[in-house]
Length: 382
Image (cartoon, rainbow, N blue to C red; front, side, top):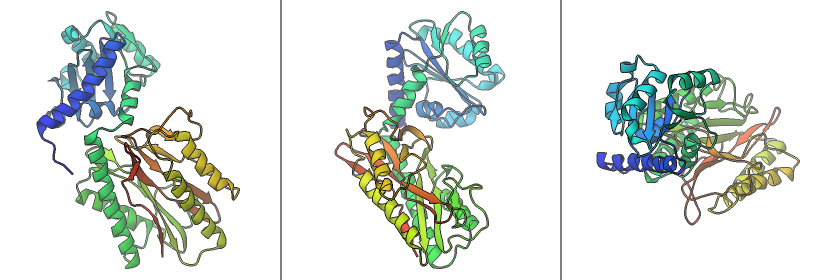
């Protein structure tokens, strides 16, 4: 992956902050507040500043950005902002921190209108309103938070590079797993899940994107196996599933491998063929300007030929979170289109208590002229 200088990173984050500032000006709002804490994780904090979390972030309509982090030392190393104020100065109280920052720096806002995040509880919102009585506080469904969610749908160059690096490392892990299966070095679900944890960190990743889902034939019927992995045999005769992602500089991959081992029944073979066909046909529709819901409907039509139905959406965007907007669903408006810069999963799947489960999932970058499959997940036959 390309190495970005501090100046380049500052420019990337300043550009994101400026876009939000323009939105605030257009909507006659002086400042927007974002809060990341144990009660609610908000990827807006790393998106706008690069800081990992546990902080209050206030961005004014002129783009002036103030971060109030719990871990001041870490924030000084990671964050890109105009002003950093330690959270401990306000006794780790988000309301007091917000009030103090607004009072000290309100000259950076075009007015006293302040947008609070929509994930506050009603009681918490009332506490903010009372504490910020001299401000015109609002909480809007289509406000700054939603603007941020929509902005994150289209990845910039840095985000694409980070996701591709996560994808590359994920592919190395898949290759290693296939090799170790063939050598007989992986015996259980636990062996595989712990190997992923080890390899992802050895290759510079921060963590897995979510709890790894590794299910042998007795459990692969579950869309998301519970528990995620056990000490049961994996893989074993029949259909086994492995669903995992790895996180590089905040950005996650998301892939699912199906392992088909031994002689399969006609029903299992048909299920594998249907999933592969749905994947191949739908990939053709992951194109700029095409309707997202049409891709999902195509998967439905493939499965309907054998009177089967997929119990989940065809895919979802990925990024700082494992599930981001948009979802690839037949319920979407036909006006919701694939756009260059989107990175979405393509993951058709079928599940049956007797047959077992089959899912094939890769991550797809929408480009100006088509798409690029940035992961190499597949159905592995043994």
